[in-house]
Length: 91
Image (tube, rainbow, N blue to C red; front, side, top):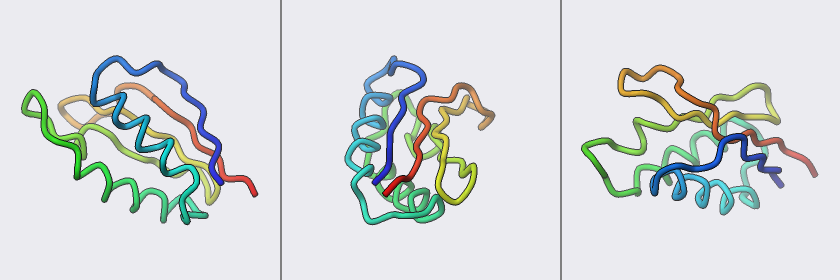
């Protein structure tokens, strides 16, 4: 099971959708950071496009180690803008 720590409050509807996806994923079968990252990529592609930006290009999961990840919101150029969520795996 993954523990979800929200670092920055969601500001947009897409941010809220990302948070809800992560809350659904916290009980997922993914037990390591790489499988969580791949699962996140698949789910984010399903979010509808808004304001000409795709959610899959604006949010990124960055593994810290095998049991911990950060979820970042990116700017238009793909640079890290703000860390939204930290997730840690525990049993």
